[in-house]
Image (cartoon, rainbow over all chains, first blue to last red; front, side, top):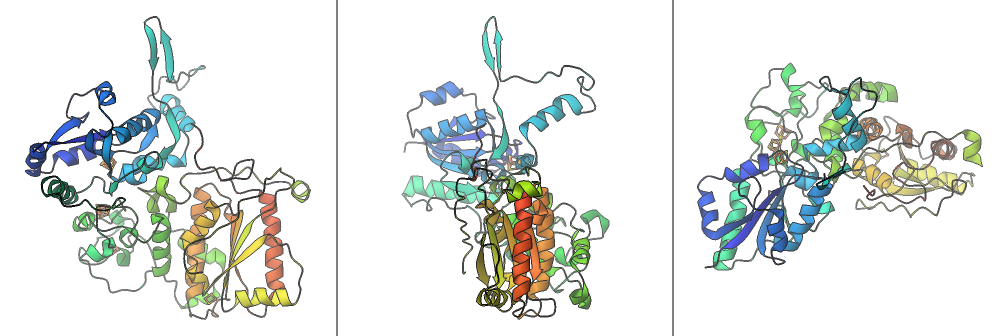
Length: 343
Length: 162
Ligand code: SF4
Ligand code: SF4
Ligand code: SF4
Ligand code: FES
């Protein structure tokens, strides 16, 4: 039997997804048996020029991890799309922007300025003329170029067509094995692949997968995980700890809950919703009970109580800002003057 | 409305002078929608820059509806419901109030002026209050100017050239 060809690439990620792929234990032997590695920068020495030389569709499946945050990430994503029959958006960064996606609260200019001139150890802190990395430098031996850092972090499916999504930061061994099993069956026995666009995870909500007991209907205050002794058998939210379970797709086996930590939402939104943050916001506002006096309270009182949520954007969109409905921070052009507005 | 489809018509080409705010107003079926109706049959004058989306209760207004209204180009979003202690479903309006408080904090973090989202209580008999709410809110949005997701020409910027 001819072997299939697989590739794995990293965009704006941390390397954890590559390690997750190596971490699948003896299944990796199955992979080696059915597949050749066509391109995998962390593990195999293949040059981009070799990929460029491959015929279109030559690679059976590419696992792309990391978000798309610079021109190189985008260039390689487009190249691999051309050369691959299937593209799997691998990990939370590729699927939703992930942790790097939180950079969408700022701009490329501010990031570069901070890193190159403002940090404690920067040589340029007091320099008059600040030096920044250039995307193009002419030298006597030729031009040297660097990728352009984007203002807005993008998800993989915002730049190329994606066949499957495998969320998780990183995806768990179980999900990877399940998917590889499906591919193996397809290759060896001709079993059809799942429909395009399938999210390789559960259709349920993380709370369905979590074993903690739910009894209390409402809460009155919030705590950070380290502020209280968390009861390992009771629901986090009922103990006043924000847990993204109600707004998160199941499939990880409630890993963080098993370690007595709240879920931060790395599996992304559930199948029913678009915006994980909006869905969590709604769930949290609903369990928050202010008591019998609520009818006598005004908007300020309520705002004060809800302000216990210190950072709604960072808490509700830890992994999904680039995939959220609003996607990035915007700037008001400033209030217009009354007369001008009337004109 | 049964789904989360909120379509705000593409803004007309907006030279700054011509720009007219677009406002999405969610009205709960039992109080505010009747209030809006009363304002209408009483022929109370008010700006016409708003469209009404009727929901069974103000609590039916999922945060996603509000975020999508902004993402599709609304310059302001009003959520109107029954007065405290008056919600047809007993506590829906309290949920709404907590949610809107959080949503306004979130919108501010996104860089929007939180005043672009407003919650108000309008009962079935309060036609004049409906009129005043629309008038004041439209005035407020005029002051704030276009939704910051829109470019100078008034269309939503999907992806800025890098
Ligand atoms: S999804 Fe998580 S593990 Fe994978 S690259 Fe992103 S940050 Fe790293
Ligand atoms: S909110 Fe968190 S702790 Fe509670 S049931 Fe859901 S996943 Fe478990
Ligand atoms: S519990 Fe939540 S944050 Fe932890 S692995 Fe599962 S989905 Fe990710
Ligand atoms: S029915 Fe009017 S707010 Fe609930």
